[in-house]
Length: 235
Length: 77
Image (cartoon, rainbow over all chains, first blue to last red; front, side, top):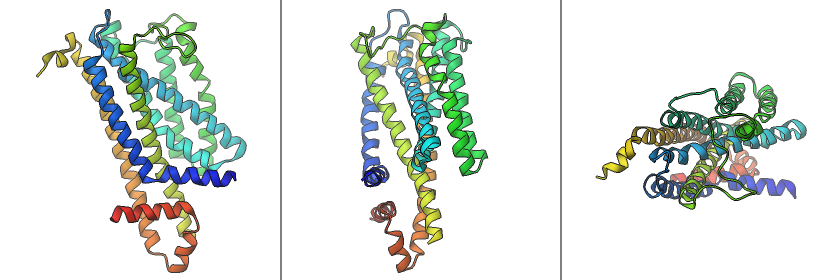
């Protein structure tokens, strides 16, 4: 029964129709998000138009954190259950997580110049995001330098150790004195951000999540075809 | 053309560079992944087409192989 469900999910993941649907949805959400964030949303009373950088910076940071958390959970599954599909999924998620982390760091730096007067500061939030970037880099590097079996184990350990950094990033603004403001969006309590800014933020987050899903699907297909190519060689 | 949209109260350089950097990275990542996909897919199609009838029957026992083959037929159409 479980293998049947897994097979069904795998068939959906490799279907080109599903990929095309994600791509179309991504284009729709990105167009709406860009229009809302660059044209419709208001200026901030303090930061003026520079606040618009938030619409690319914040979703990128959220998604890179989310992807790393998923990778580390799957890696735990890889080490405990030796599930090969978990290996393929985590490996396919890593490139988009890495790129979103890079975007968060660079756009944060660009936002820092007009807001704080500097491109870079060794602030706890920025530093912990840089540490996450290094973990992503090590994860991807392990797949480049080690053979498949070794890389699977080493990359799993890297992501499990790296996930300790995720709550540090999240709570760094509460635990230490930092240039970053405390979070404006809370799941459990009322958000302090106005809906005119929340809508573009939501649209851009949806667009970025769809993009990472699209890259994941393409990368998953690449990894699966590699496996299938080896299988065809053995027939 | 609306110049306010470009200038953004003097922050245009920062805002536009952040958005352009993001979209550029999207484009590059999409292109790289797409290229990898096309390369591996072409290998798969080539190998599959070189199989004899018995080997094809064996390969088609796996649903993922069938899906990839269906996609390759769709590509040709």
